[in-house]
Image (cartoon, rainbow, N blue to C red):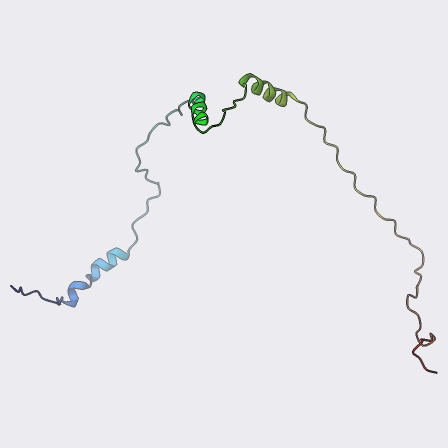
Length: 130
């Protein structure tokens, strides 16, 4: 059973192009109002839920460590809090600024020319033949 299916469909060129009035309407910018319009419904700011303190599941962690052949070690909360309070109450170190190096004193006297090369025309070398 063969059905007749068209392999190409020809459409008129006028159907593919938009009408000139529609193109002008699409190109024209929408009018902008002077006052911004808020489309979102106004919702009063809900108070943030208070943060719940995190509780570490020590029993679960101890059993997990024991299954792995390890031993769970946990810090004493009172000792940790005492150490944090001691750090908070420790006096701040006093800032001692570094002193800059003293500037080198420039000699204001006359300049002296110092020869650092010898005049090789007067020096006799062992390979010179007289």
